[in-house]
Image 1: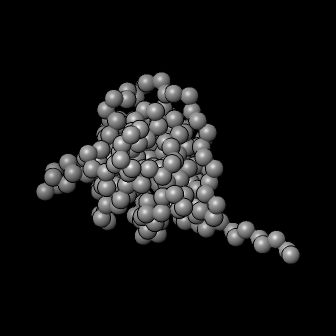
Image 2 (image 1 turned 120 degrees about the vertical axis):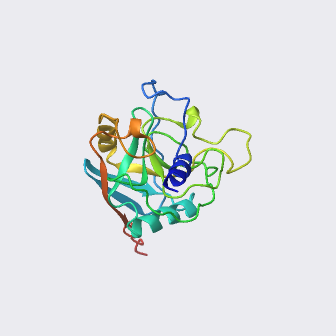
Image 3 (image 1 turned 180 degrees about the vertical axis):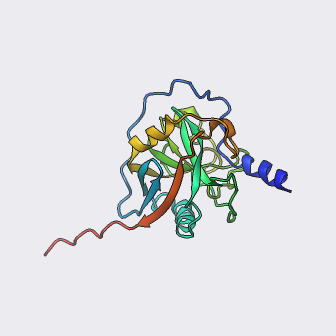
Length: 218
């Protein structure tokens, strides 16, 4: 049974077999501006803090899903279990013991929302063969990965290809880059060859609404 669960779990992650770990990435693009009034997710990690502006306007189902996992404490004590320099950092449901946490039902794919997998973007991992299969696994783009196959394919039906971006890093990309430089190999998760040899832990994920915009005096 454990073997079956492991195989199913591994199938749900972002798949990019065409990208070598040492491949030179395209020139990075600037991250998009945050959505007005969007909440922020603060990831306190063992290597520093990363703050993500969540785009509730353009990825409502994805943001609601992420917030629910965060408020349930699902991410607390989990690992960055896949680190590919020049590509992505991936995390979600594996703890320091290699144990896989229980997931909720998959959510609809919102990849056709106009947000691109540029450097600093945060998107959902999923089964490449099943558009509506994302659960709790997410990744941070370390480079402009849209042209590398992570954005929807031109001409395809909306929300059938690509990986749904639902926010972007507004603080802590230097922390993300430090995590990307950690030596990898020997992990217990679905990508043991890409898991940091020294665990990088997401200690807590907290959600905070931005302060209201003051109403101008008449």
